[in-house]
Structures are given as C-alpha cells and as structure tokens.
Amino acid sequence: MTQPVWTVASAGTAARWAAAIRAAGAEALPLAWSEIVDAAAPAEVARALERVGPDLVLLTSPNALRALPCGLGAGFEAACVGEATAEAARAAGFAVRHVGRGSGADLARELVAAGAPGLVLFLRGEVVRREGTDVLAGAGWRVEERVVYEARPRGAFDAEVAAAAAPATVVVGSPNGATALDRALEAAGRTGVRALPAVAIGETTAQRLVSRSFGHVVACDVPGVDSILRVLAGLLPEEMDPRDARPG
Image: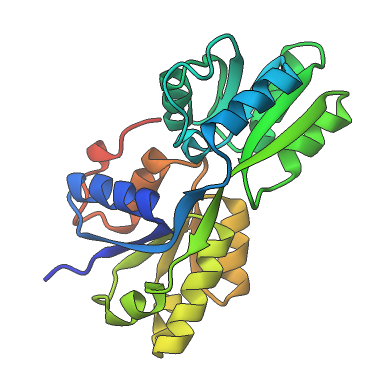
C-alpha cells in the first residue's frame, strides 16, 4: 500500500487538502488536530458591522464566514486572503475589493499601496498573527477586531496519530498544528516522522516545525492547496503528476 500524505489542520481543512491530494494521484490521510467552533453568532457580527461602519472588512480565512447567512455582508466591501476566503465572502454578500495571494501581511501592504488609510473591521480567529494589522496601523489605518471563531483541540488527535499508517510526508496548516503534531508523535513514540519531508503552509509554520526538530521542512510560497500540490509534486514525483498541481 502506498504511504499516505498526512494533512494536519483543522477538521474541514485537513479533509479538503486530503481530497485534493487524492485527486492529484497520491494517497492522503486527514488528521484533524482541532475543530473550528463559532465564537460569535451572526446577529453579533451584524451588530459589529453596523456599529463600526467599516470602509473595509478584513478576512484572512473562510472560517470567519462559516456561520454567516447569505446577504449579511451586503453593503460592505471586503479584502480577503486567498480565493477560498473571497468565495465565502461573496456568498455572504460582501463585495470583494481585494484578494491577496500571499499572507495577511502581504495583503495589508497591498491595501496600503492601493489608497488612503481607512477604517477596517477584522473578523478573525481567537489566535492570529499580528503582522498584517501592524502594517495597517503603522500606515495610519484604524483597525477594529472581532473574534468570530476559534480552533478547539480535538481529544482524539493523539490516538489517531498513534494509529495512522506510516506517512510519506506530512502537510501542516498552522504553528499550533505543528505543536500538536509534535506532541502526538512524542506521546506515540513515532518521533522518526520528524525526519520525513514536512510541508508547511507558510513561513511561520515552517519555523515552528524546525523548532520541533523536523529536519526537512518546505514552506509554501503562497498559502493554499495549490501551493501544497506544487510542493508535493516535487517531493512525490512518482505518485503525483505535476500537471495536477494547479497554478494559483
């Protein structure tokens, strides 16, 4: 049996990445270290939009929109990290003005370059990187934030890692996911997995993996499934056709 690619991320993301990897020709096993839960009801988000009256709503993950009904964002413009986030924003009624292809900090720099400072409402998770908001604030933008979701660790994750078939490589979707994976490997006595290639969704996740003694870490140049497929096509050339690694 071909060894699978482990996808370590929140439940929905791990499953989505695994499905894309299978479609590209390799075996994949989703291992969800967390599940996404709502931290604000749609009515609370609606009140925040009305109270703040932002020039722009900043969205860095589709998870920020998971509980929002169609039409709630009508009348508001959004800036999104990634096309998946942009699609979810449009479905919620937002008019998407900017779609960043890199990190939140990259999108913030694009917004600064595109026009005069304004008022931003950042709908975010409980844990967030500060680079993007720091860039905006440093350029004179006003940023208000609302936590609308959180990643809740799954109690079954350690046991699932212990029981999983030996991987060909691992794909890790966040620094917290890297920490959870490392802890699960230690508990299961499977620390040899650290010697395998590891694909990190971004540089911060890559740094966390390196700090946990993963020896061969490759960071995606742009966060997203298309970049994951391109990296895996290089790591697993006999299993994945590089033509299946869609540009994006």
